[in-house]
Length: 243
Image 1 (cartoon, rainbow, N blue to C red):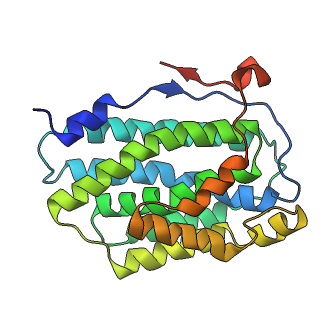
Image 2: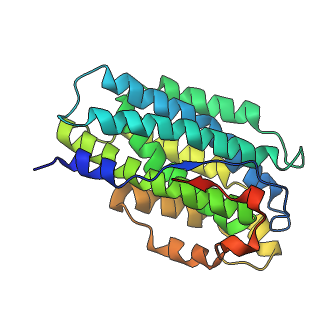
């Protein structure tokens, strides 16, 4: 009988990021999207967290899956970098603020897999719907592709923490809420001006709360009204390569 970690590994799908061409986004969403895309700087640290964990005691049969998830983070970083580059300087620069957020996560004293779990479960799964909700077809595609990987990562890291008896800390709870609050600080201005739902900053923080504590965020179903583009609606250079 295979382990849960082995089962998760068989469910993964490989894909290759591409450099998308520029497309407009929801009017006024540039600031929110810039903040969300700047947090791509957390992808490599998450991979580093998992790599650090593999040097310690880990659950049986989990190593191959953990190493595969590390590779995913490199691909996510590249895909989000390509997406950010497609704007050609049209977005505000939040690199300095994002670096400070990264440092806070890196320097947090908790177990590295717990940090990865909290980030992926309650920060990335808010960030990705933001890209889908306010972005263009390229951002919606990137969001979808990364989300498929992150679903496996969240289950992996949640299972790891359960197996190793690692519990959430108040420090990481505060840090993820601060991170999400910074990312969506001006989302109300955008969605109100565009006559969209989910205008409240509190809405997105509430989704993060629900994702962290319940593992689900039913209210995010509404953001799926931002329709995923069909393959025939996009230029070939905007489509990832799937294996």
